[in-house]
Image 1 (cartoon, protein in one colour):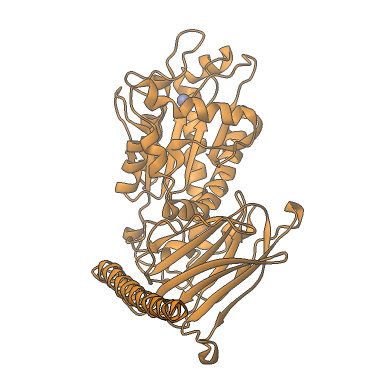
Image 2 (spheres, helix red, strand yellow):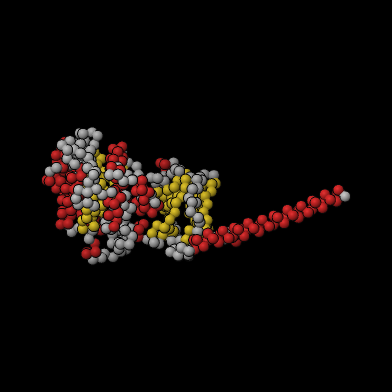
Length: 445
Ligand SMILES: [Zn+2]
């Protein structure tokens, strides 16, 4: 009896267990598909992106020294992959697509990959950026078709990469996909008609359409005097005087010139950048005359944007300049956020080359105009005012107000005229060069 009871209880329990398990499986399946439908509905409701190409999964795996990044994609697609340093990244560009994954997937610390970011790059392209822990080499990029036998329903884009020593890093490119204007072209505001190289195929349009817009940015202003000279000259007054004089000179040469400020008022750094972008500027020149801790240092210098300062002095200067908003009581953190997005970051890479190219011409002109330039006069640092992602931008230190001779010189209209002539000359050379030679950027150091 006991025995029979036990057997009965056992089988009853087994039946109950099986029933419960089945019940849960069905419930979970129902809940999952309901959730999935929910998520899908959210994503599908965004009609702005064509539904042709989509990404439904992303994985990063390690196989010995190889880190493999995989995107599950709905169909085969042209792609472009490149490696970039400072910091080390792998950048994947695809045609516009639907990213069917929930946000927050970017934190995938695996192998050589620290994390990844993604987003629309322009109206027709999408970018995925892998931030790397170290220098790496991409071994291969391929698109694999679905494999029915293995129940792999998707195409997969697979990037294999291997960590390498810094000294071995080489920029690489894979794939034929050509992102539109904003990537390959001159750092242009995308919607603007692009008449400049390096897009060589574009026909030359009427002269009237090629009038270049130059933004002059007199440093500091209003509550922010900038540097104060030994004889009590204010940097903000010298930069404004120089900008107004330079404006006249450039306008005579046929350029459209706008100033971020034309009187003694304070303008936030971000608003200076925004002003340039709103006006679809072709070139941004910020004018300064700061102080140097070493009072004997004198002469002009030119700065371009860089994550890392080219030297301690450049870094100190950028830090000091970036405090302008804080000096005036604005919160600067907001600005840092604005410039950290993937889109801006990527476009900056393209623009940077143009800025450095122009900066070189400017240094040459300053050298021949006054001979008064500092040692290694072309430097770089993280100046907030140079962060327009699509406009070549430089910051000119016309001299140092901490130096007696520089201060005296900068107060003289004749000296400022020499500097203005040098800047105007470099502007002409720059636009002539990029107009006539699509490859000028690459060929010239
Ligand atoms: Zn300054």
